Amino acid sequence: MRRLSRARTVLTTTALAGLLATAPAFTAQAQADAPAAEAVVETYSDIAHAMYEDALASARDLSAAVDALLADPSAETLASAREAWLASRVPYQQTEGLRFGNAIVDEWEGRVNAWPLDEGLIDYVATDSYGEDSDENPLYTANVIANETIQVGRETIDASTIDADLLRALHEADGVEANVSTGYHAIEFLLWGQDLNGTDAGAGERPASDFATGEACTNGACERRRAYLEAATDLLISDLEEMVAAWADEGEARADIVAKGAEGGLSAILTGLGSLSYGELAGERMKLGVLLHDPEEEHDCFSDNTHNSHYYNQVGMQALYGGRYERIDGSVVEGPSLADYAQAQAPEAAGAVATAMEEAHARLAAMKERADTGVEAYDQMLALGNSEGNAVVEAGVEGLVAQARALETLVADLGLTVSVEGSDSLDDPSAVQ
Image: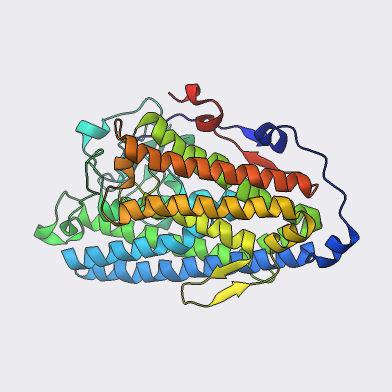
């Protein structure tokens, strides 16, 4: 995927929402009715743990499907591996509201969900559309699967054995963020290959024979491609195991948010929700694509799964705010929530957040339905001249921005301090066109 230059800013609540009113004094009755902030943080941590447990379980299902593909490469086993990858995205995408407010999560996240990526680092690409080099990335077409040595600056890396250590060494190699060698999107590229359809219908079409052995192998280096897919999948599991442990009862991430204290914990929750709503999802992942009308600007670009990726981000934010998460086995994790706390302390602002969240959900659900029913995929919605598709994405952006604004008002009414991530796509569109 071609990487675009994109400046980011960090906006304080004042910069994002305008001059904020002084938080009103809480009444004694409101304080009595509100759940303790510590209980809210505990529910949030329990939901985080459950979300990552589900992401890990679905990644293990993906691993089993990958094993079946490698044991017998066929159209059927490849399709099953793809379905397992798509299923694995559902719980993981719901975790993204945990970013930004939790440094442990944000620093870790790049290993599993970094995007966009220059896929030519990993494997063969169609150079007529992808190009052969990049001024920003010397490893743009390094193709580690085809080459047993990789030059990174002055260092020559021995790539004769494709394993976890090699993939870790290549991740963001040469200081270039687009050198993504691990995580969901590296696996996605290996399973689908490039989407060469532009804004026409269709996702990637990698043949199962790319994983075949002997004379049945297509596009060369099948044994190394098999090794890469296996190593990347194993790394995804180990990375998710790390985050499950971090949110367990004695885990580092849980201890970190508790150590912030009552107000600090609430601020961390709201920082994550506000930053994902505004700068990350509304701005970098959605608005930028509409501004540029670029089919490359989709989060799950090889599989045409972006509509689900965005939708489940919103589902996750609602779960974290509302203190209720439905697990992949149908069980529910719930408890005292930020929504409960807000309703007791700042009912008007809490009502506005609830309304905005439902509206954003409805707009992203409409986008999801448009793709799921075969009207058009997300990358087609971005096309220049597609006024109807553009409007569907823009409606989602506007819903998420309104959600962020409502959260900012809640922050003010609760007397908290929050800084959220901004995006030039929203704050200075001329900078990205």
